[in-house]
Length: 247
Image (cartoon, rainbow, N blue to C red; front, top):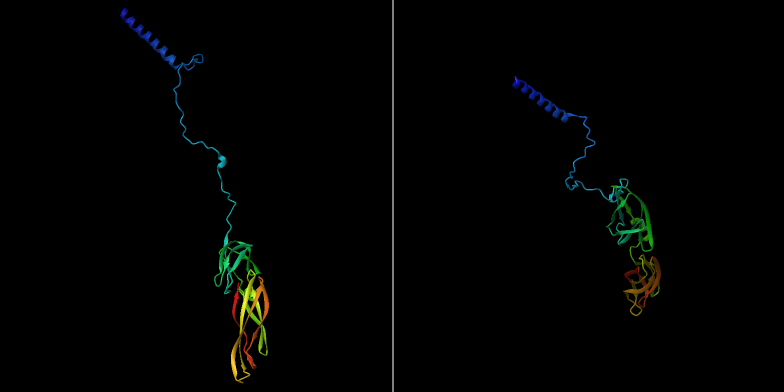
């Protein structure tokens, strides 16, 4: 009888103890604010940087989308068959040389431009409009032929008249270059005459030499006398310039 009572009592006491432990673990209203945390030092962990910081943002350049490169168009400057080399200027800037049957090809910004060439002291300007992918040609040959007339220093006969055994020839020296020069011309003239002693008609050639100092871009006229052999009944041919020199 005593063994039977002892066993249920032990079971009852065990249940109470177990219930108390379980209730203490599951008690959600337990006040832990007055409980000091254990004195445990945190582990010494070094931080790791996993990204590159952005510094000096003022050095970042952004393209200006409003700035555009101007379009360009072709321009050809020609002096045709003019036998010399002439400098070409665009908007008062030297851009190259146009030569005999060799035009100067350029690429210029779209818009209006002033094209100029100079022959000696004489210059000619043309205003042209350049367009993208559209060839514009400026030909200065007509102006050179009509106005400048001569591509380099030269001379020409502008008049002559005979007087007995002498012929006077007027020579015009032309200097279209950019510097003063000294020029010379040799003039010849064929003629026939009757000798006084033999009374025979014979032929001969008379010649003369004339010099002139000619300033840049100007012309000068000098006369030269050609002396003929002694006789009479002269028949003259037209005088010619056989050579021209300058320095």
